[in-house]
Length: 173
Image (cartoon, rainbow, N blue to C red; front, side, top):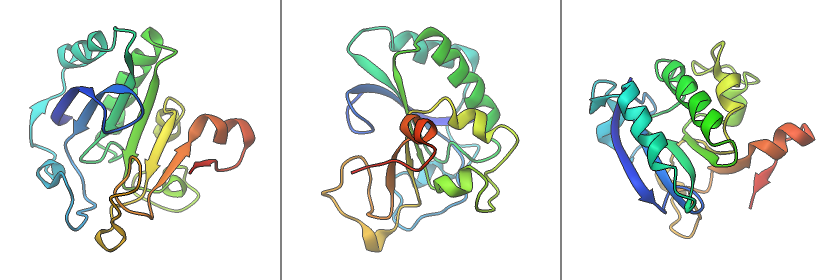
């Protein structure tokens, strides 16, 4: 897997100060995507163990709330195996820090209740390590600058911890 960018001390892609990993590769091709350069799976640099360790080390300070995964598309099937292992390692070191993930796929596609290429044998394992999911493709005609942590009104902020606990979709307003 390649990555397009890493933002340390990011405050735009989730609550609090975060480290944001922008993976490469996305087939959604959303009109006016803010990160079109990351559509190419070969763009950027290889995500190595050293890169993963640097991200994890950068999360050590108490003021870092957690990490955010963006893209490209974290849930493209090619990206899931590497990200799953990265999330397992992150969680083992920082069980109290949170993980946000932005995906153009919907929750229903990610959980297999709606057929999609993103649903693999490890997708649910990956979802199980994520606290907040921002789901849905960016839609230019629904673009709204007043929305927190998302670009268009079709996108949802889903509290995956509460969703798992309550057995129903819990959307953060």
